[in-house]
Length: 449
Image (tube, rainbow, N blue to C red; front, side, top):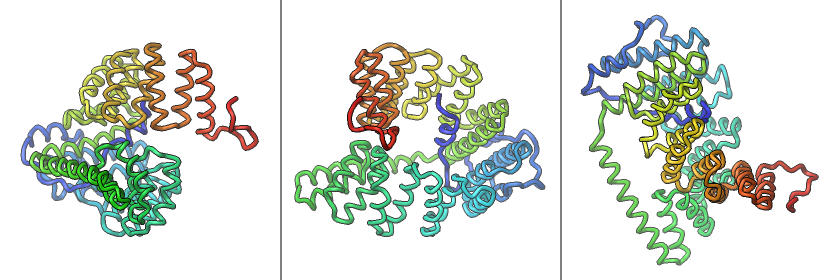
């Protein structure tokens, strides 16, 4: 079962100013109308600044968010988590300066509150205050040193300033620890390319396009590096792929502009905020209110994957099998939504609906063929099911090939035992101990037991 915090973290954060809603006003007003009249005298998080210039339907939505946040304040007090939700509400509707003020207040209460550090870093980076942004990104990395995303943001900022040696010193150890992070590979490859270390650049960028075949700019870098190495034919191939992908990206952008729908965009942004509020009520021990908010979220924006994930998780946790299945069946139809397919695989398996779990996880593998998570989940499913053990072993080997982590090697060892391959299990378990740093300094770790 997917942990609640992972579901919450997957929720996307919008950052652009919402323009006036042009249609669907009556329906939208009904969906988002507040349960109780807001009390303007208790503007705890400063959301009234959004209401002053909002259209009627958007005003109702912001009132509703404010009502829910004040209900949570009555339960928990003013916490960094609630201030963070309000900050993202302000940011989503173009009030970045007010969002930054709330994040700064969060840090006064908790100097290590990561969402505030990351939010302030992004805010100041968007304003061109790069050194100030770097300070926040570096603080975040000090708190969470194993998270590649922090190193990526630092790397992006210093690469833009041409500080190539700093980029390499920062990211080379990260690549050694997390060789599957596409952003890390791409930034480090670009740094080597600018330093004219073409062989290293080619090695890193080839790994990038292996893991992410649609990474447009990586092909341009490969074309530059191979051309500099005198490999003209190969460079031509890379530049041709780059041009084809660039054309695809431009066409997708034109289609996005052509089909832009302000009403839909407003609903999507509100759905993201509603889902965050629902997660906060779950954390406060009020699943009934969380469920009600998620119902409103689905009415507002039926395609909201994160809302359906959270609702399915809630029903599964409560043992409401039929309700959970109803949500999973809808979520499974979102065939291009990778987190949803992975969650369907996990929860269908918990419900012992193994064929349905297999279908969902196979779709996850199709969506991300170079990511290990789908293969590992499918291998674990077959092991749990007690079926297709040779296929389980093949999936586990693929996961290990993509990411030789201790977890994936332990999975392979367990499947080897189930297949009767004790020698393979011993080898995999030994490698798992090496990968996980489980040997003490005096233990022999160079030979198999």
